Length: 167
Image 1 (cartoon, rainbow, N blue to C red):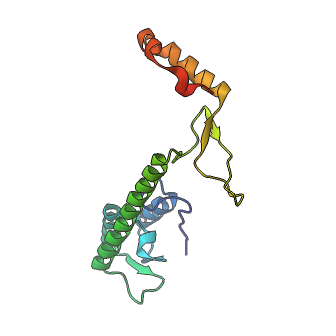
Image 2 (cartoon, rainbow, N blue to C red):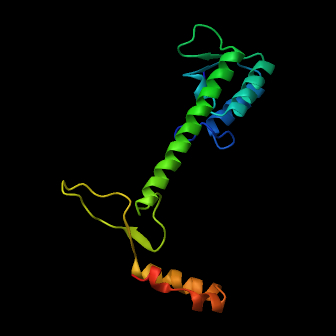
Image 3 (cartoon, helix red, strand yellow):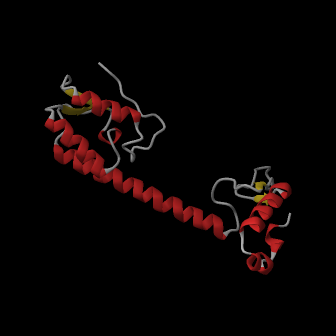
């Protein structure tokens, strides 16, 4: 028995998942009869990838089983489960984007820390850190300003109001 894992890698990816790639190579050797997974979405959370992997399994006459199943998974079940996984991921993406838009509308940062900014530490009355606040890092802002001045056309530099980058 061999175990293939893709810890910490999105199930929507195929090529960048070392575990699933190793499984697919093992399948090509034609020396296994069953692939057992916790659930169908552990094989892939992408409809196209799921269908391709299932097609490969079928070509090599390999059954796909899940931990809770009492029989090999049928094609229709893989299709339905991969569709549901796909919808769940899309729903998460939409909610994440909407949450980020809401955060930005409130004047806060919705992502990582950009060069020339640092986390601004402000607290609410209960002592909790207010998330999403940023303030300029003066020395790094000077570097950004210098890079822009070196690469931007002179008229553009003159027309800009540098106050937005001032510390």
